[in-house]
Amino acid sequence: MVIRRLIILHVEDNFEEVRLLHRACEAANLAAEFHEAPGGLEAVAYLKGDGDFADRNRHPLPDLIILDLKMPGMDGFEFLQWLRQEPEFRTLPVLVFTGLSTVEDRARALAEGASGFFMKPPDFPALVKLAETLRQFEPREAN
Picture: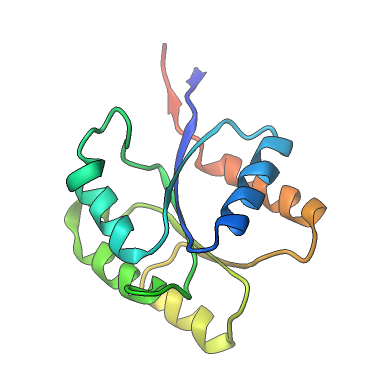
């Protein structure tokens, strides 16, 4: 079996959070290729291949989406609602990764179709440990 890089679409409006997760994945030796969308509207455009995202060689469909909930424009909940109505993306794994949330946010995200819900860890070593768990989403291909 040959393992290809895990393609992750990271939907997050805070560039520092994006950079930190990428560093944690590198530290965890996760073979991942990251693509970013700063909000739900951009994530929809990415998945639909609209505009700047039309080139699938540069913007491949993801194996996994990591989603923040609190974003301007289309928030994470609205994005989940859109995603789960699209036949092509109904089963695409989505991990909500947020810093501020309530029990209600967690319940709502899971009800809207999130595959998992995680609070952003308090320190970098904990974030690396969380990044290691993303290996379960690595696609496997035969030679």
